[in-house]
Image (cartoon, rainbow, N blue to C red; front, side, top):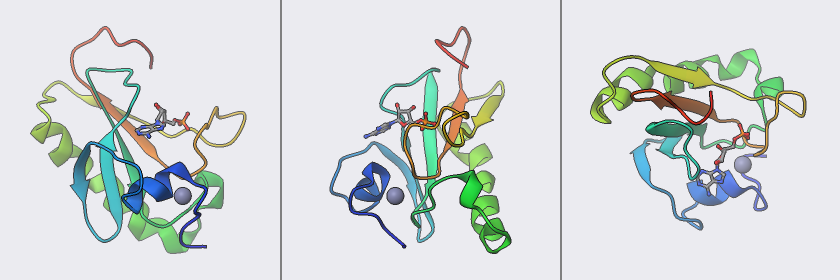
Length: 115
Ligand code: AMP
Ligand code: ZN
């Protein structure tokens, strides 16, 4: 399945739900988290509906690398100068709430509310 009509992040990709986008290309989207834990907190998501890291296969390696490789530029553009943190929650025990793969990318001066 390339998109799930019931998935909130697929609906963001489709433009049916608004988001504060910071990057978009043919493979991915990056937008501000609606409930940030840090001064800068964005989510990197593939446009393809992949449920979680549990579903990632070798054929997705390029896509995951592509998303990760946007991070330094995005953090720089958002004014993050002193380091940043990636978090990926996977499945129930990983406390994943939105079932569309996403990479949390956080930065900015501490203290943070979480993470
Ligand atoms: P996780 O627990 O890793 O599944 O995190 C899901 C994240 O998605 C949380 O940090 C939420 O604040 C965020 N989130 C949920 N809905 C939206 C939305 N419509 N726009 C932006 N971020 C969202
Ligand atoms: Zn989805």
